[in-house]
Amino acid sequence: MLKQLRKNPKLLPQGTEEILRYETPVQTVARVAIEDVELDGYTIRKGERVVVSLGAANRDPLQFNQAAQFDIKRPIARNLAFGSGIHYCLGSNLAKMVCQIAFSAISQEFCEIKLANDPPKWRNNFIIRSLERLIVVLHK
Ligand code: HEM
Image 1 (cartoon, rainbow, N blue to C red):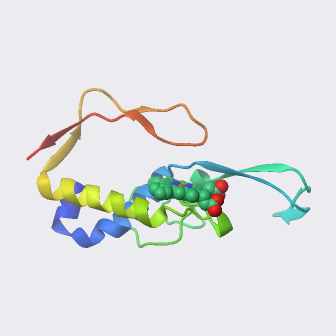
Image 2 (image 1 turned 180 degrees about the vertical axis):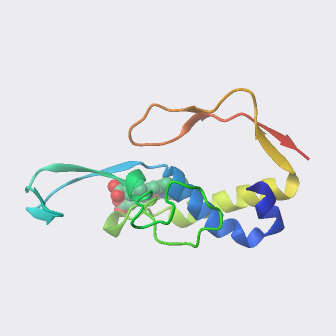
């Protein structure tokens, strides 16, 4: 990915979008139905709680070609990493900007980034998908 970014920095926005789609840092959001809702043959009754898997939606093969593949060149399409509707993430532009600045700086400064021997360890959390630590080796 770093090599591709260095060769073609224009991939930065879609690469960032693809990381957010592929890993979906906020995996689930919850809602309480304020009225009965029919959804795909199911009835959700007023007052019932619903947990929505943004992570699954972002790998929906009906929405994304080869959804299980990470593709830095995937054209930008709507994904649910920042939610949807009135609660859409207020910090989405800031978060994307921070990612793009970080990847741009790393790709310009270093030729290679590799995982260190210590394997990445994911946090055991149903809602937030994040790493406890990520130790990498950077080569100039
Ligand atoms: C990669 C980083 C981030 C991700 C993946 C993310 C994701 C999300 C998601 C999925 C929601 C919707 C929650 C829901 O529907 O219940 C949300 C809401 C929100 N986010 Fe973020 N967020 C990120 C960064 C940020 C940052 C940097 C800020 C502020 C500086 C921020 C502020 C908010 C706020 C205030 C809401 C609530 C909006 C509302 O309920 O009206 N987020 N975020």
